[in-house]
Length: 214
Image 1: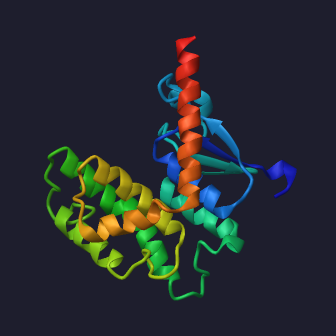
Image 2 (image 1 turned 180 degrees about the horizontal axis):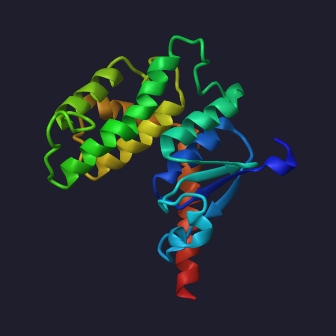
């Protein structure tokens, strides 16, 4: 990585951007961390809105490239650093399932989970982006059943995305603790990169609390 093309992650600790932070640790690449103070509303200021008009983290910048949305960031970074082996190659039979599950998380799983958490009906089948909550959950569980990872023996960037998503949703009880899910999460929580992310986020949160109390 050349000095003029540093990779920067715009991150808020203990949010969905922690998944991108974990991916960077799994990739083993150098990066700069720009901490976005969500409580102070930094994500709604013009400087950040120029990166992501929706005012959300994560966002990354690499040279002149800016990428937002978790799934897109995972695809971009894993392809950018293929030496880590976290993305099947274009001609690999696993490439299709890999892309499917990276996109499925944001396009079907998250809408289903949010509707369930808000006690909302999914809407008519022809209009719903996911069909039914039970159908989405059953599809995820069926995929995990092959284990140990989402695509079988190979750990990929898709596992970073799903490990984080299932960790949060089971913790907040919007996804049930099905045996397949909990066994998957037990393996996920043993990843050294996750321990590193938890340490970074804990340090950043403590520093923020200390600064706020001054």
